[in-house]
Length: 412
Image 1 (cartoon, rainbow, N blue to C red):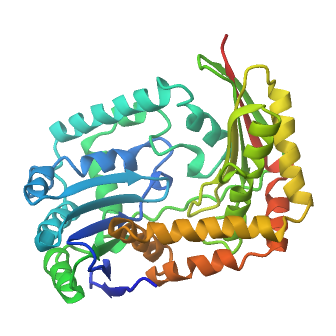
Image 2 (cartoon, rainbow, N blue to C red):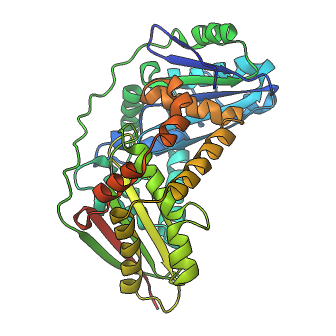
Image 3 (tube, rainbow, N blue to C red):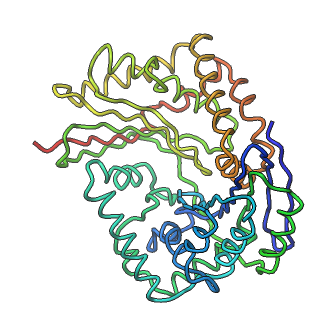
């Protein structure tokens, strides 16, 4: 059981505290409720651009990294289609330095053409390096618009195209900041060797005066139900063919999330899982095969992907995958197999809660989706999934008309 204390400031900032006396350190995690789904179709990649801009200096602090390093701290951030997460760790005795730094960049960034130009170049290079010039890197750019036709999940967090970042103006950037990066659109979570009363006082001292902001009211269109199979066939200079199949599923907060997640684990979590055992070891069709879910805030995707061994045709690969998906959709999983994946999930959840930084991130995520206390129910929710629920989840997901398939062929 993770102990949790909470406070909401008058400007809407939610503050969550977890005390962990086993470490001399503390983690500060600031989670903003903004990701690539909050972008306009002709101005994509902004949430990810901000992940970089937030380290380029704020209103009163020209360098974010230097003061933090001076007190023995470390930091990083990441962006998804739903959220942008900033975190730092430092000695608990220097906790206030972290509050000073995070509050100043929530207040206002150092908006300058010079800062924008530096980070724009970094992001453009990342786009080229990770998505255009890396083997298999453009799969997200291909599969997202194949699966989504109206929802903004149709572009990855890096953005639709480089031009959107290259053409971003300082006014665009300011508008995005002030309509999303606000205390009333964020969760501040502190975990480690801290005193909750001191944390709440520091939160009031450093964040209390940041004004509540009017958030951009976006109507995000719901993705229509997919009614026919979609296919895309491409050739790229890569070492081996890949097949990538995606199926629409529900959101992270749906009741059947836990069933669908366990289906993915039965298929590919560990060497004894079905896809790995059957398709890589026994039939030797793939060098690697995987199944996973996106776990998005809005209805997401169930992905089944595999890298073909030489001599395996795309038709053989797809038939073999479909046979496994048909099997889990038509035959009840055994109690033993289901309990095995439940135990794996329970152990991974327990291990993830050992690290104080992980706890800060996870508590912030749960608070944003509902309430931080829900983290203590996760294991029970997985353990409560029945064999019937697994069968129902598989049947609802693996409908051929619900599938988008990418053939990613090696150009010989």
